[in-house]
Amino acid sequence: MQLSDEQNLLRDSIARFVDDEYEFSRRQKIVAVEPGFSRAHWRRMAELGWLGATLPESHGGLGGGAAEMAIVMEQFGRRLVTSPYLVSVVMSGTALAEAGDEAQKSRWLPAIAEGRIVAFAEGEAPARHDPAFVETAARRDGAGYVLDGAKHLVPFASEAEAFLVSARTGGAQAQSAGISLFLVPAKSPGVSLKPYRTHDGARAADLVLAGVRLGGDTRVGVEGEAFGAIELALDHAAAAMCVEASGAMWAVHDQTLAYMKLRSQFGQTLGSFQALQHRIVDVYIKCQLAQSMAWDAVAALDSADPTDRARRVSAAKAHLAGAAMAVGKEGIQLHGGIAMTDDLAIGHYFKRLAAIAHTYGDGEYHMERFRRLSGLGGNTG
Image (cartoon, helix red, strand yellow):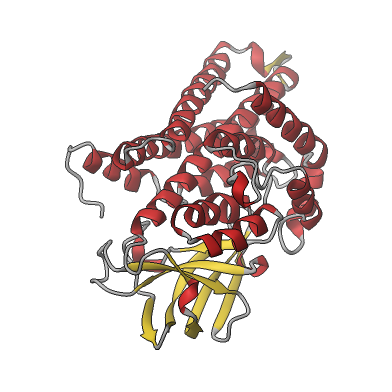
């Protein structure tokens, strides 16, 4: 994708920031303590306009689109930046802009641009990535609703001011019809969290909803018809993770190549051995292809055809899941035993790439989805 002058400036400014602030030892200090990201950096990102870059100008944003989101995520991937950007800006911002009424957009989109966190909470533990699998129930209570259920693996939930929660108001357990979205204030009676650290050092929590009473104005969109907005948010998340993975893969390549030029074995640098040269060239090719696939997924987010969008996003995520793991493993192997220590960045890149490969749909899920949307069969709902 050809970037405009303004987009190049955005990319360069983010690159300078993360290079300065997320040098590996600094990054490790940030993720070692709660809340697992830098609140000061998050405020700075809001001040610089990055959090509002993709949000509509009419609601406090800068009016950008998928390309601006990808620029942010790719640079975050290069330096392993941890933040609520994906769950709040990309996912909740997308769903609210798509399905929210004017009052909800006017209240929450500017708040997201200012750095207040709205965590998107749709996944449930037995679902295996299927957004139609919703057991969380929302029953009518006068003019409002009562929610009961649980959501699994909500990133940075402990920092959220509100949650955007999918709940079933009708239909059967695995049907896309009958699913609604609700804005749930984090301090609502009946809301509780079970927080934990994730494999890659970030923070998440299971969200438990026990008799949570909400007003009718907290429902986002038409009752029972939220599945389209949920899929749109998940496609944005999957595409965002693809470009983040691309950035991290390039970092693995660059760091491994630099190591091969310095590390000596039998009186020669590793880079002088032809067999190892072939392997790092293969990593380079995988990075190039992954970057192309990731940016095609980003371009697909602007498609007027939801099927075309979903098919291309799933093609990219299915490919990136495998490529990210392959590049991460090769980086580990070419570094040798030192790569297994926590003191070297390469192992942390591998952990993040592994997390990306299995978040918001793993390779198997997205391959089946791609086959089904392409008319080639497949049984993923």
